[in-house]
Structures are given as C-alpha cells and as structure tokens.
Image (cartoon, rainbow, N blue to C red; front, side, top):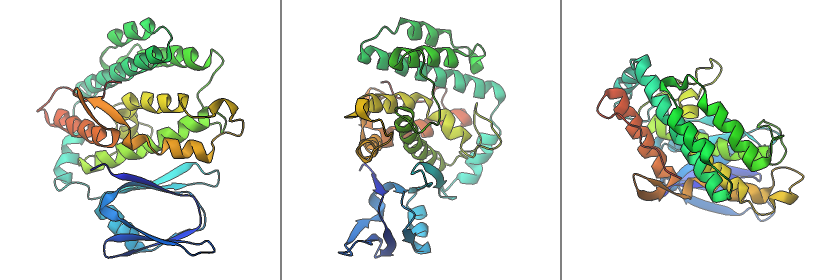
Length: 296
C-alpha cells in the first residue's frame, strides 16, 4: 500500500484515538477528521497554529512516519525521524560506519552516473539534445574525481532554464518549487534510510558537519530529476511571479505517489526509495555490489 503524504496548512489540533490520527480544524465549523496512522508516510506541518499531543509523535514514530515542520516562510525547515527504525539498527549502523573509503567512492560513482543518466532522460523528454550528458555519465570515475556531476548540472540547467539560471534557495520561481519538491524527497529518503537501519547523517560523499542528512542528500541525487520534471509540468508556472503557490504545493505533494521504474518494474517512488536504501545496505555489508536506482 502506498503511504499517504498529508499537508496541514491551516490551524488545527492533532491528537490520537484508537490508533487513528484525530484532526480538529480550528475553523468556525470545528471540523474533525480521523486518519489511520498506519496509512501515513510523511506529514508536513506548515501553519504556526498547529498543536499536537506527545502521543501523536510517539505513534507517528512507531509507524516510521517522517514529520516535517515548516518555517515562517512556509518552507520545510525541520524533520523528525524514528530512532528505532530497524530491529538490527545497531549492527547495521556499525556496518555502515566500517565501510571502506574505496567502497564509498564506488557507490558515489554509481550515484552520479545514475543521476546524470536520469537528467539526460529529462532533457530528451523535454525535447532538447542530451548527448553531452550521455557522454558525461560514461566518464564518471570512482569518487567522481573529475566532478562530472557539476559539469552535468551546469549543462542540464542551462538547457532547461537558460544560461543565466542559478540554482539557489531564492523564494522565486522555479527555485522555490524545486526546493519544496527536494525537501519532500529528502524526507522520503531519510525515512527509508532509518527504516533500513542506517544513519542518515553519515554520507558516502556529502560530509558537511552541519548537515544531519548527508546520506539522504547522497541517495536522493538520482531521484532529483523526478522533482525537476514535476516542476517543469506544474500548471501556471510561467505566470507564477509570486513564487510557490498553494496549487504548486498540492502537485508537489504527489511526489511520493508518482510511478517510477526500478529494476524494470513500475513502483510508486515511495516504495522505490525503500528498495534503493535496502540495496545500499547490502552494498555496505558486501552481499551486493550495485545500488538499485530508478531509471527515468
């Protein structure tokens, strides 16, 4: 079953009853709804007047639901994840920590190749030449020492949005939409990593000491083109002078449910990410050599 992504953008109080999430909207009608917690995958809390009981957090963590909080600019700024995501977590974290540098470099090489290949497929579907990226993905070395990822990114964004486009945290279109989509993707990947018994903070390439989600940022790279494609197809994006709109958020929240091909089988992205993180651990423990990534 595909887990649901729920967004709360209005004042509300969240509590629990009989393993159900009880949502009381603080509108004039005081509408109350119930949602089975076992159906949830990601919850986004966007409004400052949302209150919840500690029992809500306990049950959400028990069901491995990622909880995202947003800042005053309505952008995702924090994330809660379960500390006990896997029954073998201690052993798996130890295996992850003991993985060798050559293995990490090989895994990063696979990751960059997969990302560039998916970017090339986005360009093809967008109707622009992609030969440069197809060549680059074959040139990626162990550890991507020649930085093919950056070369590919420069070419990719230039083909889509023009040579003057700069990826940034600006709250303007299309960066605002891209950043929102990437934040949802990051939460899905971080949730899957903890469910597979690994630490999201210990990356195979990213290692910024201020980043608590280095591994999530590594593993989400080949999935980013799915966000890019969603943003390219957002209705009314050309007229979106005010940045991220409610309608855009509704479309981007569908990301975990979109179908992707992984291992030549079509699956919802939410489940595909879990397959990717499970394969990553098998690489760490030495029973598999290749990470399972989706093919755009």
